[in-house]
Length: 295
Image (cartoon, rainbow, N blue to C red; front, top):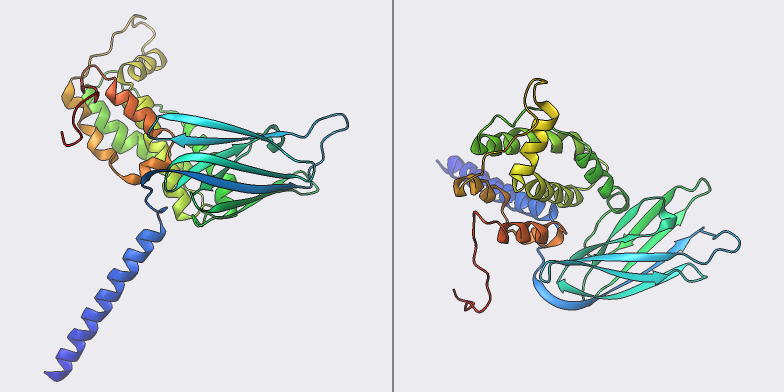
């Protein structure tokens, strides 16, 4: 009986440890939850092994900063110094934000950068002998060098996957179920499956892809169904086609996107989704205006 009690304690102890480790791993797989709070974030960096051509001026870097409260994407420009250094000091609306730095010299590459009030993020970008670009960031967001360089490539892979199924003959409700459970899942499998990204970066870019699909496919039902009809209608079918107007029940899928999750505050498509929802005539959500906060 004593041995049984010891064994039971061991099992319980192992279970508690497993639950603790699972919780830690789950937390490590996510970026820290941002909170809405205005502040000033600083970024300093260097671009090494870059030399402008004779007669050309030093290039301009652009930092794009999403603002979920004011619902806009801010742009800040900074010319690279002769020593190859740059710095930004920019207003942000959250305790943690992910911005994007780009320039003509990066050959269409852009790099994500952590923006955290009270913290200086350091970004190092370098060119090797072949012109290949490397990047490294020092930030408490703890994103890897591969995350910084490749996360946008995953997004472009997602956008490059086209739906090849005839959906114009479905009801709005059938379309929403099929789009979420089949089309969206398949797109994510074919694009966000690269092991070079950390789990944090995968979750971040997966959420961006989901929000983009929500905004430009599910919330744009009539446009997307009209496009599907043009692409897949039989040759003998008429050119004119008017999709069914979805009713309020169609938008039940919104609960699947967890729009109240604070992780959404990182994503620049989030405020576009909110604007689309607020301007939807079927949902008819009243403007906030002077409505008391408690209401």
